[in-house]
Length: 338
Ligand SMILES: [Zn+2]
Image (cartoon, rainbow, N blue to C red):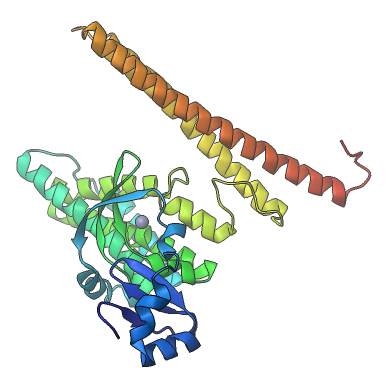
């Protein structure tokens, strides 16, 4: 193998060719010849499209926390527990432990700087466990994960895990990689909640509650977080785009529910932006006129973008509903066509 190219065989699917952060899929026959004659790799792939384009849009990387080699080593012990049954057990077990800890009166809250520091470290650990869960699931599906790090999605800081080869998997396995992060996070949060209940210290329970909130947030199919990818892979349809032409009524109905949820959250965000802008303007120590104008301009831009996104979602919802009614009319010709 020449230079920094790495070739990863897969028992069933295409092989993975990787150089740094760039990944390429190679069919098995071609991969064998490349392995035999590595000198042609650079020329053969210099102009190939990068696989990441299909899966990573929107996430901007700031820094790498765990390099690929370390992420692979740390995710290896998780990999055997990334089947659907194990993941469901982890999530359900975590939820049960959290409920039990709450019923036992596990303390939650921050009593001082040391509690805050411990809770923060535990929360970061749980979020890294989340990313290692994605990495372990990809590894179980036959491909090596890449690095783990910190980045941003829009204005939102997020941890990322380079699971680029996930695009080579069938949709069911892609969904498993999508779900693994939250399942491991919930399992870890449940364990922390139990430790908090047994020890009587508030930091573990506080971190568990924060991890529960962040898991719920990442499952919302609004931004391109886990919920978005999970839904996309389970339905084989993009929650941000029109339903595919062959989509059945059930897929359209589920997409309609997602659009409604997105509309509700966008409306909530508009109200929040409006309220915040008003609160700053009407603060007792009223800011100077130029600051007020800047706040009004930023607020108007944010609200405008949210309303524009809402109009797009409303159009998609209307298209889904008309698709469902067209199919119903076709199945029941006694209903006169519009
Ligand atoms: Zn995730």
